[in-house]
Image (tube, rainbow, N blue to C red; front, side):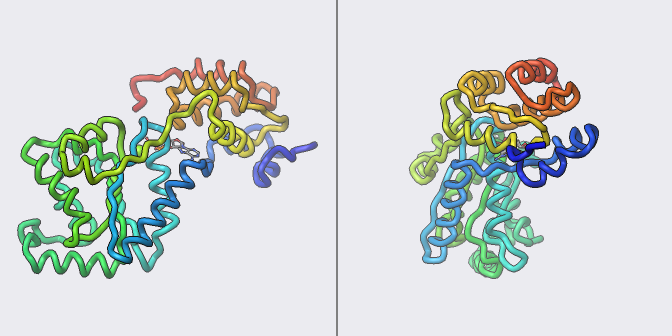
Length: 288
Ligand SMILES: Nc1ncnc2c1ncn2[C@@H]1O[C@H](COP(=O)(O)OP(=O)(O)O)[C@@H](O)[C@H]1O
Ligand SMILES: [Mg+2]
């Protein structure tokens, strides 16, 4: 059997029984897109420049499910080691309307003291020392849309802290991650507006080369015995439309299609299977 269209591990799995192959389709696959690559390069530069005292602020903006959190996770996996936490990653989702950025940040880097006790020159000094010990260079705030929905008394202090993180007192580069709503929230504060650069992750489009590369790479990991050609204009247009350009939705549809291709004996994904799985996967109230 010619399985040269598959990645080495998928080639081995493709020889196994259907049940095993179907289960394998659910294994997480990570594709390094050119967007992710340039983002990782940008983070590497931030880390490099922070060493010589230069700091920057960035808003990583894109629709839900496009792959922002995945990019952040890759950056953490790449740059953090057991000895050095170069990236301090904070997920703001669990805090609801009660985000006090300073409090969350201090507790994330290991301080149990109340914010008040740290809001003096000694507290600032200890914070700097802790960050130096950790070799921290960048703070990434994921799900930062939440900042727009906090209780009104916390809005201004959070803007102030956000701007202050890149000042000499804390001295970190900052990346906030969210959707268009976050972009609006940043633009409301004149100082954040001028300080934060924007990095927009584009949605997948019918004619995107990068999308073609993504699809070509993705099918190499689905243990199907025949070749699937997904990077056609028709399929790209269909996926981009039906899935609102979101990687999460596209990946769901492709995995469901691969499973159907195994069950049906078709052994490859085509437009027909994709529409069939899409109709089976229509969003439910449970999806976010
Ligand atoms: N580079 C990628 N390669 C493969 N799958 C990806 C990639 N990026 C995202 N995904 C898929 O899309 C899902 C949603 O991505 P996520 O990073 O959580 O999006 P966001 O944070 O923008 O809402 C992931 O759980 C994963 O299944
Ligand atoms: Mg996310």
